[in-house]
Image 1 (cartoon, rainbow, N blue to C red):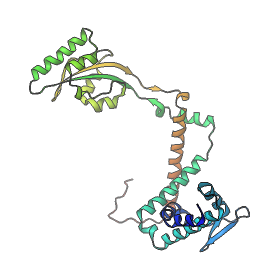
Image 2 (image 1 turned 180 degrees about the vertical axis):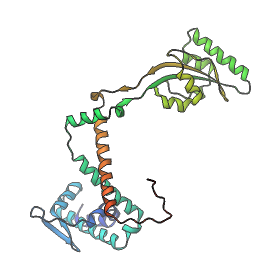
Image 3 (image 1 turned 60 degrees about the vertical axis):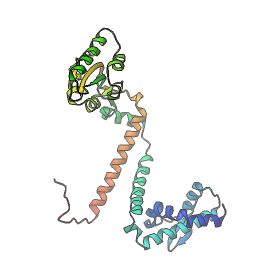
Image 4 (image 1 turned 90 degrees about the horizontal axis):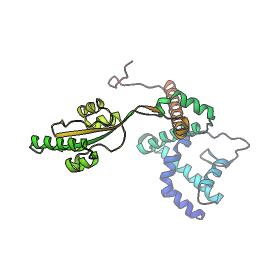
Length: 284
């Protein structure tokens, strides 16, 4: 891509992208040192050799002159956007600016290089985060009443009898149950998921059962349910070696949130914020 094509690209698609993504830099005074000479000034705003080098690395073009021209045009567009009030009125620009600040906070956090001991200490202090919750493996068979409660109950009882005689629960469900009403995956699930899927009455029934037990038919407004408790698994803390990546992700997530909260708190303390009498106020 030659210099003219690059310039046209800036004035087209690049205009919007440059304005939104680089707006935050429009208000940051340049820090000029011997190691960071200025290659251009746009209405007093310095464009340094380091900025050009970074842009050059990220661009498809390796033309230094074209890259500098791109940054000059981008700065002109940014300054124009500020001059016409986009920072105050354009929600997209305002959101992009806020996100740019958040990204800067995240970048600072990611620069950290915690030791293995720090990660292990974080894991030890937050073991519950890396625990597998108590789980239940429940199989569920449903027989709809369809206007005939007696027939539905008889069918559910036949299913229970067939299971007692050795028929696999899955086969009994195929033969006697309503396939479209099977509400649980055939796998261990956290108790709150079981409760949400089955409802409180059926969930309480499951919690009173022994592993391997099949319930008698339990009636609901829709029909009869048969439950099989395949397994019950208590909460289990996973060893550090099994959750190393999860520990690292959670460590940096919390560090990011803490850094962002510190920044917001500092900005609030230094800002003048006046609330209307009609504004909702957080209760102390």
